[in-house]
Length: 306
Length: 276
Image (cartoon, rainbow over all chains, first blue to last red; front, top):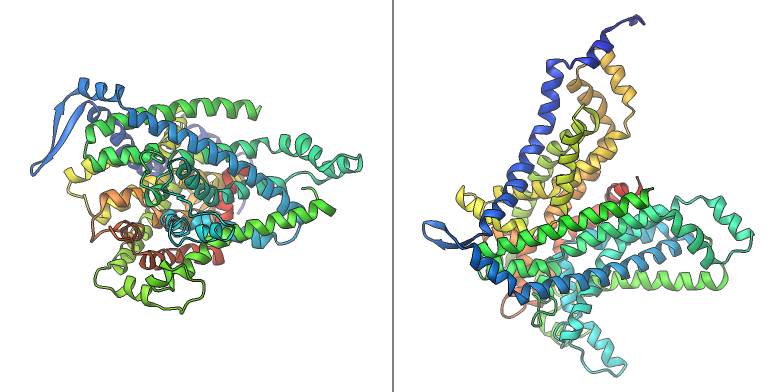
């Protein structure tokens, strides 16, 4: 069967959509739009109204009392929330920086050693896929003050037991270590794909011209990998900002407020103090921060892209 | 890539060895702990008589509901994965190939980015209210719906990159032969993106299985999932280390299976967005 070359049908079809195709076009996008509107946009809109109220629960259900002034006054004087923003910032900066450096080094080394790539990659997938709660359990055992393996090791070198999770100035670092263990593999996977895609000839040519490894990394590899590095950085910053599960299990935000990141603060206000109205106001503030961050990250991405 | 030589190569091997040990140690430690009696755990013994006591306790103990938790997790993860694959793939195809006004796809994708960046606890409060009002609080249905919403952005992005890789000429050829859009999608595009469906499905399943924040706040004893069950062992006024360890080890089984059988798809799914 042959189609005549002069068949005008495709041209017409391109100009006017057939009814069946229009149905298909709307039908394919509609379910996702419904999910997003009902389960994400509507709840976030709801937050705006909730944030102006005090919400109390009784047998009859939730009752709203309009108290915008009180809510904003509480926000203005809320030390705990401010501390949680600060703790989150420290957590994100510390963990993402360490993960980027380690992940990048690991990608270079694995690619440079040239052996055991498959094994390393297989191992590296595991922490990413394991439930974060299980990771919290692992480290809760390792960090245990009385019998944890880390304090046993410390005793071997003559150090007294260390309060990994109970020492105020150490606890944040302890949860950062867990995060580094959990997420360096993802940075590695992203950057390793980038390293493997580098043009071999360029690096070999530089080597022949007498460039040192440090020079090659600084002058060739980092500039060529800037997009992958930027993606890994943004990915990780977002995920680190959202951290909850492991810290919930390890310290629940303690001791004091030492590890109380934003998500834990929200959890405490929403579900421990049962204050859905004020929790909603804090959520609105967090969402505004996120949007501001995305806007600036988008600007950064555009600059790197060019 | 720079081939390492001499001292650099030695350093490279040392670095790799340290990395492998660091990754493995917590796994081995919790695995060993899960086979110890509580007394051996407390004493920090390295030599111990292995026992299945903790596993028996977690799976069949009177005070444990872990088998129920596993059932709940399997149901929620399976149903939400199927739903999110169907909804997400259709949307991805629609946005990648059909003629939408630029602002519609920009609004859709922009919103998924925002939602994916926001800490999930900001929406758990409204979800809690909403599900209470419509009588879905403390049901697996509510959990399925929230997991679909949480995994939808990732599924759409992943499937869009896979669908864009299908040459448009194939579809056009089918359409010249008289196929409608729907038919071209089903007969031509869908079979070609099966690897993408596997990658997205595997990740959606694992993320749903692992999800803790929503499950913690929208479920109670009968509807709790595996991560919530583990947290209960860790949370009770007296931490049950052995039970916690055994439950955690059991919870990693899906991840282990995927690491062994689905590695290619997982790596592809996790790095796709970054490389393109």
